[in-house]
Amino acid sequence: MLLWLWCIPLMVCAQDIAVFASDRGNNAVNKYDVDGNFLEVFIDANSGGLSNPQDIVFHPDGSVLISGFLNNAILQYDGETGDYMGEFSSGYSIQGATRMEYREDEGLIYVLQWNSNFKTVRFDLNGNFVDEFTSIGIFQSIGIDWDTSNNLYISTWANGTNGSVTMFDTNGDPISIFGDTAILVGPTNIWFTDENELWALDYSANRVSRFDASGTFIDHIITGIANPEGYDYLPNGNLLIAERGGNKISEFTSGGTPLGQWDNGGTLNTPNFVRVRVPSLSIAENERQAQIMVPTMGTVFEISSRLAANFESLLVYSISGALVEEIDLAQTLLWDASHLASGLYFIRTTGTNGTSLTQKLLVN
Image (cartoon, rainbow, N blue to C red; front, top):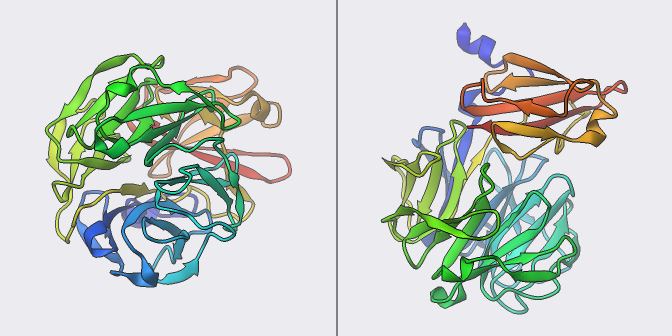
């Protein structure tokens, strides 16, 4: 009875949260529950010609997109069954696709290229080629993220010996090597934390390095991991890292304390991505995801002033669907969530025309 109440409409059921990891060596993708228990081989070996899978993106229509290093197009699969649906991207031959990121506020998918001209390319949600966003290429580009000013950061593996992170402006033009990141040996994935620190998985040095907002080196926050390449956060705030050289997924607290091997069962042959899929709070056709607050992780969030001009209040839901707070937009454009337990929350608002907006936030 309690489980039924937990899964009523506009709520997210814990069993619907799924984690996907690449079984790269077998050209397949595995699916796990939120506790790391192996559920199934989600994308079968070589399905649709998948070769050397590198990353996964969850399309708003429910399908999943996979980049394959030896595939010249992004491949699309059914989000429930994993069945091959065909080539997603068109109009551009991708050369050595690595990381991908979907920008909800733009409705565009960014794809890094390891080979050829090394430029970052963009596609719309129908798979149509939009442009080569970066004006220059980054050799062996393999990590991507944005800061709070929407500047773009791209890492280079640089033959695993002389890596760094390059900062681009909002037009895709290079600014400079970011701070002290030239100390990295062979970085892969990079990301900004809620403390506005840049964390970098250093594949060649078997560690995670972190830098402050100006690029100053802080420390090697995590060490002793075997060729880290993929990462994501669980709803409870813990960090998952795919150890390509260790054939496993390891779990850490958000502060970097090791908690042991996370995955339990199944085969992981040189995994290089791990991604957590959390369903949207709403099932309504007139509801869409939006950038309501920034950052997406932390305890204090800034509310979009443009949104506040068109909506009266925001509703905050826990992952179980319980309403935990209402924010009056006429009173504040800052939301302090430090009084809430760490975890995933959903922000929701509805306009007078019936249009609803949602956003997922991680409070930690």
